[in-house]
Image (cartoon, rainbow, N blue to C red; front, side):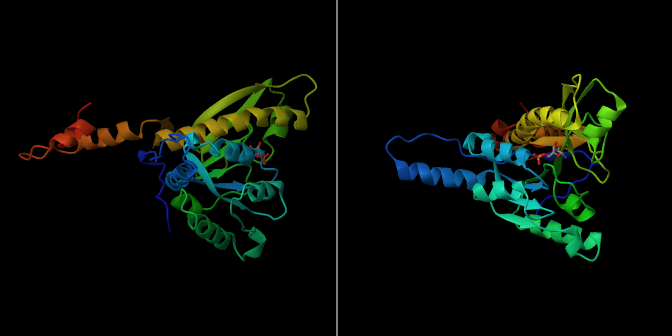
Length: 277
Ligand code: GRF
């Protein structure tokens, strides 16, 4: 199965994927097309999972239409048919797949099938964007997964976050982008943004305002993960530190006794297991 094993217990570095910068070549249409194809082939690959209207997916598709974003939506998966999220993928020319829990005799079988369908698209990151199923251990062991949740976790986890926040009477709620672990909305937080509750808000009006903020936050965080990489240490997620973490790990390795490192290695930052800047 494709993808790197993801473990929350240990510190883990996810370096960014190389992308080709978009240099316009006026008067050379073919060269521009070829360059754009190469760029998407090398771009950081996203598989997005949806269960409903897919406005978060649309925000990712829109952002990814610019090569500078650094990530491409290579497939969209769902747990049900006939949803607007799948139609959005279809209109964008992105391959889709559906894995219904009810088509499998056990939840474990569904998890395994879903992991295989996702793996077929070789993602660097899976984005759960309004996917209303709890992901199983096979998926979580194979890929890093990011989720967006319409509340300020750890408050109001679960499927009715907006309703629960209103019922509690909070004056401020918001959204959370977080890594997914085996629990329900319990994974390490990447970013959060607050949204005030207004007088007279109902679940629909509040959720719509949260979703406006949520789409921006999700697009920003996924883009940064793709372009900068990230490290996870315990519950702390740091963006843009994959290279630094790699250097720190190299620095902890014992230095070899004799062999001096070749000059070009030194200029790249690491020599004989010691970090140079
Ligand atoms: C989002 O608010 C997400 O956090 C929640 O469901 C909503 C999905 O919206 N789990 P959409 O399908 O992306 O429009």
